[in-house]
Image 1 (cartoon, rainbow, N blue to C red):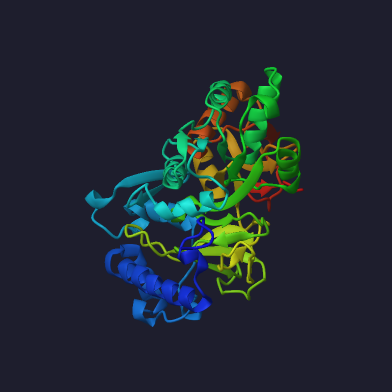
Image 2: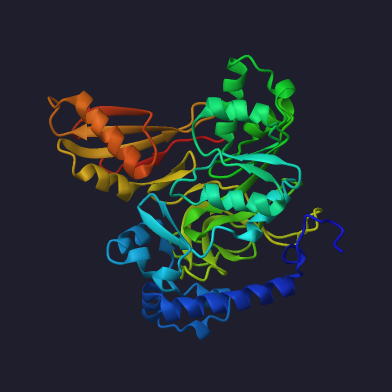
Length: 423
């Protein structure tokens, strides 16, 4: 029996065992993509490769990196971007993420996601609220099932309804929270405004975060003031969920063995040495419905090696340090430049748009600067139309919309500009 019941066999593999396991899984995943995925086969053929040629990460790097914008463009021509590897009737779940991108999953019950919650102390006897969306996007259902695999009881709270959530957390003596750090802070603040003493009146012991950076200042507030044990994970919806997670040491995120993670030069797609920061590129190894490989997340991080006192032997992912390209993750959802341009293209009177992402406090704020072709247009009506369309397409409502004269925005400005400073 293992000394630590929170660990499974894959988490404690030796280097040689892990390399053998991942190479076997990678070979199977690439064969599936080549055999059954129309786009996967085309990418192999353009690179002049067959699956059996991929004998090392260096050879894998001869295949192109596929990014979110590429999938969005492919979706206009092929359902699922041409990456589906099973007949459509065999798909168990279809999720939708901004783009839109339609993501097939063989099941929402992916038991190994439970590792990320076990490492954070979730288990039998916990009552946990999941505050990720259960609507279209995969977060709510996937993390719900992972918590159930741990033995926790789950309250499928979803997003919004903060007053009801606060009452539920108090009445049920909820011990665990899954969501974003800024939302937990807003829940605590709202509870205090309602007259509660959070430490005295609530039973919350631990919180698990993804979709948003957990800054040191937020962690210090939650752990030092409210005595909530905090953990963070790194998840990417396009490849099926959580890729890396913190253990109790909280000095990096252990990589899941069901994904092959590369750190590459964003300009060339070529792998970088261990410890050097670059773009996180992911190949799912165990999803039999989705033939995507070398997906470029656009996130910048590094992978580090070394033993961990927790007993896990995997490589670790550092904290995400920034983004590559014209996209930003805002309150857990990606805002992509090409998508913004497309949703505004059909609105009369709009010449150009710039999305500015800031973080003046502990919450992301999103502002649209809109160049007008005609300043005499009905700006209030236009503001409402843009806000409604932006929320419908990007699943976020802008905090502010500012109109500026045509030519006021810099010609070389990216559509999405991230001005956040993390502390």
